[in-house]
Image (cartoon, rainbow over all chains, first blue to last red; front, side, top):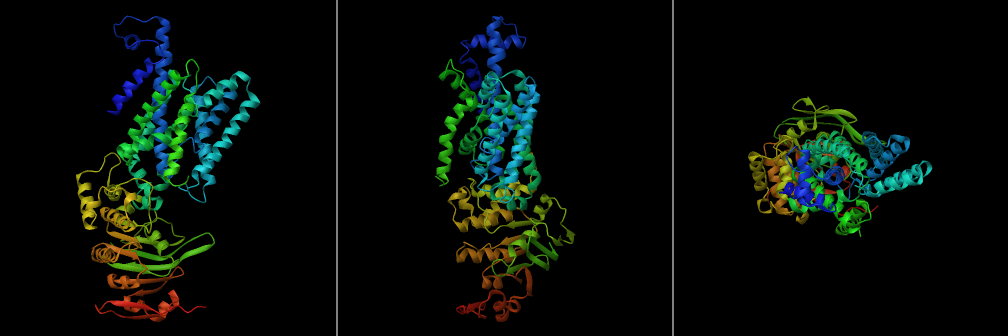
Length: 325
Length: 256
């Protein structure tokens, strides 16, 4: 059911803003698949195939990856506010990616992804170092994460201002806020492979993720190898976050919003929560991106701005529910 | 299952919390662990459960040292119920009890029919069948405690470690729980505050003080006025109540 919604959403999203009907989209896709269809004019064909389609696919993949990261982090940290963006991991990935861009490897998607990955892991390492006394499931994790995020945001600005010219600063800033405008097939491919592997890895840890609900001692007494499982999960979320950030920049709050909504639908058990979060996260980002294109047209507003506009009220709602506001 | 603890010590930097504890628990025995707050009961249980690595000495299950056992193998031998294990998650009672099946399940498959049967039996045994679909947040303290115990039973282990399982329980459920712990063929080590309850349901009592074992034996030999004065700093009268159970009465503490 969820997958049908996803496919339909993507199809509609491809159509929105292209100015083409279903027939044209069908012809573009059919032509590529070698079906006997009347070919489209080159410009329209390129618009659909080289710009719109990868953009929608990338939105789906990134939405899925971030939602899964949020669900995993919320379980590992036992904190319903955990999200790669709020924990500073996305900022770390941004810094890593910007360093690679400034060093002059901007053309290579793999280079940027690698830089983002190193940045994400460094941010995670720093977070764990700062929390080593109180433990990862400390209630201070979000506060500490915000501090780590601020540090990396400052580093990113410093690197940008000290090296870039005005044009590249503008481009990178737009990307930092989370923009799908630059989606290409290479990033779609990288994202698809990493998401498939990452989702499988975390899904196989479902029982452990459920077990973390009552803390590490209970999890360990249930047969979960806490240290190894945690390391596997944190590295996997770092990789997923890094790939998402390298592809579209730091889109915030998806990892916070989606798992909360999905828990209402399918309950807190991760065997169902993780795949459902992936599907709903994908649908969510496809629609948010389509909306940003339509609402602010012809202006290109980064999708991260929009997810933040939706995410911040939800963040406050969760805080309120926990009695902290 | 037989549990042996040999010269076990554990502590945090600068503070030894468990000191040279040696203890043998026979198969099927129910051993009560008593002692004041901070005497090291919980820490000892965590070491025995394999959740803490001892700084000295070792723990053996059925004669085999558990030092390098994978968590999963430990969890198939021995279940552990923490004193307070709370969650923000919206798990339901039956889902919490299903967590007990974790060490027996493959990563690839969800719970199967036999898992559901075992969970249903554990719920039944703790009088929780009617609450099976209730979310954790709506449970009382006692219901949460019983859910954890059902979860430990669903783990189907030969050994069971319980840390203050009767906290939050009303009298009826305290008695039922202790009857269950004392009556099960499992080897049970249970930390308790209520001395009379410990005396009534445990085969043997182990009295801890400042991390060390100071007495180990039958209730009548462990719960003596001099020992209770030394360990708990109270003046106690030990006698029998009208039902013939060992009873402990306390005098007003002397203000110093």
